[in-house]
Image (cartoon, rainbow, N blue to C red; front, side, top):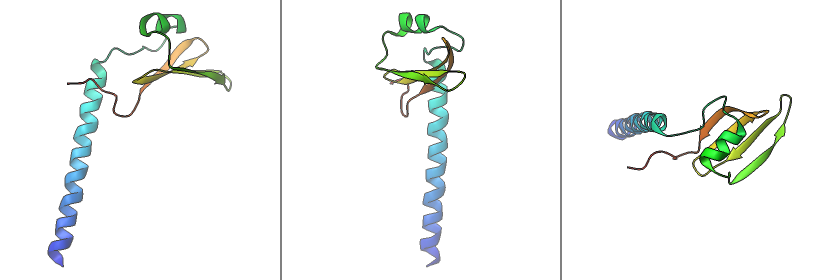
Length: 94
């Protein structure tokens, strides 16, 4: 019985370590990706990255809208980039 418990504990510990490594690797790869920067205008983003797959209308006050691209979504406050968020698993290939 003790061996089974120990085996499960080791298996869960190994999974946690692997998950941390993958997340760190994704963050490092995301830093090398060319993504919209905070403060850029909608016109700049569309000129550089093309037409988004989906545009979501603004909500709230201040108005926050978003554009969805293949690997990331861009959130705007009025006309300026507020934040860019990678979609799960969207990192540089290779």
